[in-house]
Image 1 (tube, helix red, strand yellow):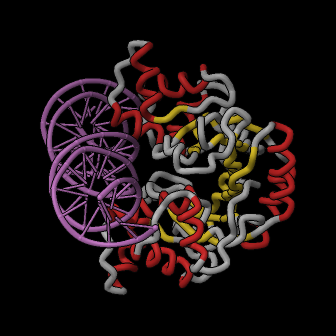
Image 2 (cartoon, chains in turn cyan, orange, blue, green):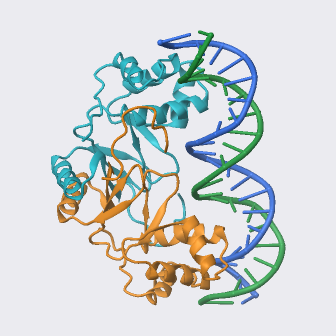
Image 3 (cartoon, rainbow over the protein chains, first blue to last red):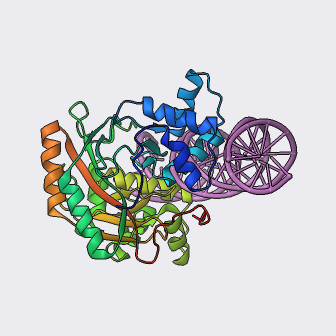
Length: 159
Length: 159
DNA sequence: TTTCGTGCAAATATTTTGCAAAAAG
DNA sequence: CTTTTTGCAAAATATTTGCACGAAA
């Protein structure tokens, strides 16, 4: 892995930003705060972030939300997740040494997360063999959960 | 894994479609043909598919391309891939019993693929424990390749 | 012939960007 | 003061959809 810093507390944000020449703004603080308030394993899309901000009467423009999500992801503070959807999700990169993975129900969209040393070791040695420097590792298991068995005919077109 | 059929040849397409009440059209045949002509490990986005079709003087509308990609993916004939980009990629699901995985350079976008029994076994037992029925497994290793070392300061804003 | 698929253009959805004003350092 | 960041609205991208016509079974 690279030198991605593990943020122990929101207070480190200022330092991380300053190191790279970015400024600490109320918007950036607020957005990071929100991610800290989130239960572990939760992730937000840009729209969900906006909705949450509005609930707390924070008036941050959508453009700033997008810019902040990208910035924080590029700094390694947030992790960008791609499920089988049309938008990205973000979560705190709490512990970059052991990224976690997701099993996703293709029908209801439910996600469960898990960690795995097996996967990480595999990825590390693979990257080393090929001369890559790992930034993130994401295993995605697309599946149907108990509540949503595999459909067999076109009658079930939904989703 | 589910009963996703492994297509041995393009000729089976008709049967697979008919089974679910879909029709065999020249457009669907042509698009599947293209994927068969692709070297293993190659994948196409909707736009790339259009470009390739145009090169062969096939005049299939973009809407139909999108519809066909979605349809074939839902039938298990194609596999939908999400890299850290703003569009999806598709590839033939040649062997659904051992999906392959990708290591992606975040800077230049190069992808290399690999397979792994370790990953598949891990995924199978995980899914079983949680009562999920696996549809696909994708490990993505985001990294920087030899040619594109990790950037340290904001001076390198590109990309 | 009846139902499904296609092409077109318009509509959506998501994300990015130019620019002037406001804020950070 | 100087440079970055914000908010807004417009633009750019990616994908989906309504509808009338044409094609498959």
